[in-house]
Amino acid sequence: MRIETYRYDTVDSTNNIALQMARKGAPEGTCITARRQLKGRGRRGRVWFDSAGESVLMSIVFRPKIPLDRFHELSFVVSFAVAEHLRTCFGVEAVLKWPNDVLVRGMKIAGVLIEIEHATGAAIAGVGININQRELPPSLAQRATSVLLETSVEHDITRATETFARAIADEYERYIESGFKDIRARWLNNMWGLGKWAEVRLESETLVGMIAGLDKNGALLLRDGAGTVHTIHAADVVMLR
View (tube, helix red, strand yellow):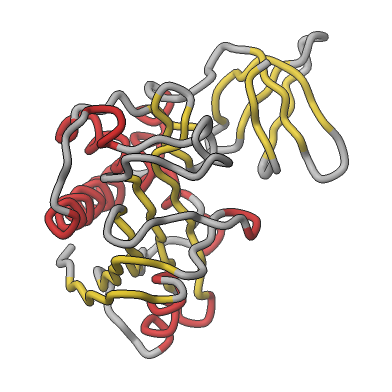
């Protein structure tokens, strides 16, 4: 997949720009990057914090020839690519938290947000990766980290963005060729909390059980104390007990 990058300084959201471009026919591989986002967002409307010029902030347009109800698979593709690139090229021991977060030592270092443009058959993958933060706001200091904080090595953000975009594109091409079963297996090998007890907060209830893996579609499997396996497609919070 060819990457064509459009660089901005400050934007409300790279995903918003990518969505607008997708509606106008932007091809697969269109990549929007920014030094700063004023209204960066994560899953369920959560805010993504960034400091200008210290993070990889980008959104990539995908147009996979798969049914729309499988577009959620892209979340696993992109998050795996980010975690693998952090490990192999940045020396950071990253793991994957269902459904789309990347953690280091239990703290968030990257997140992925997939938004689907149904009318045009496009999916936008928004990616935020903490790279050069030397410190984080008090509200995040115990919950988030950066490549610099983990390795004491600073990186050129433009170059880092380019290499992450290429890593994501390469993983996407492998997914298109090999299917979801392959990426699911590799994702499981790097899954945070697998085999451990966790509390999962849903909209209407809270479940407690052992994280048992993923079903064939990527839903979280949670085995409770009675041995019943719950299949969870969406959750507000997943935390280890």
